[in-house]
Amino acid sequence: MVLRRDQRLRGRFVFDRLYQQGRRLHGQLMVLRTLPADPGLLRADPRDANPGSGRAAVVVSSKVHKRAVQRNRLRRLLHGHLQAVLRHPSEPAAGRWLLISLKPGSAEADPQALLGECSDLLAKAGLIP
Image (tube, rainbow, N blue to C red; front, side, top):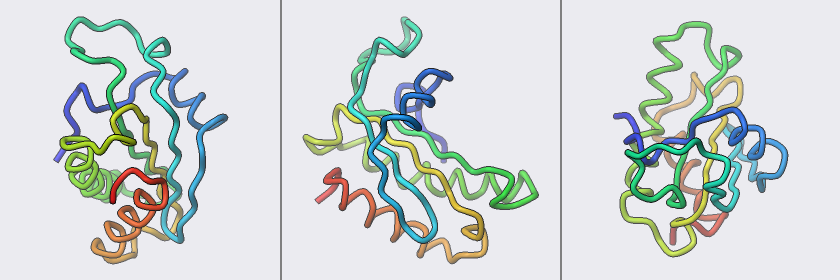
């Protein structure tokens, strides 16, 4: 499953800001970066109803797996999980940007372990109860 257009982070400046100033939470398989939404960094798009809403992205580098098919599979798995968080956001998650970066070796992990760690990191960040 893919995140809807209004739920996706886009643009180099957005990712640069998240990497430089985002709050980092480390797990064994991934790193979660969060930052309060800054709609000024997004390009104006008439299709975006609420540019200040919660958005997310998943980064899976070629260090995680050589094959793009496997990287895309991991990305879709995490997109499906994040979509549920962004569809019914709690108060803290409503105006936050999220970036999940998978670490090398996470491709060999069980999908349930990945989703469990993602939920744990989101809970540590205070984005889900």
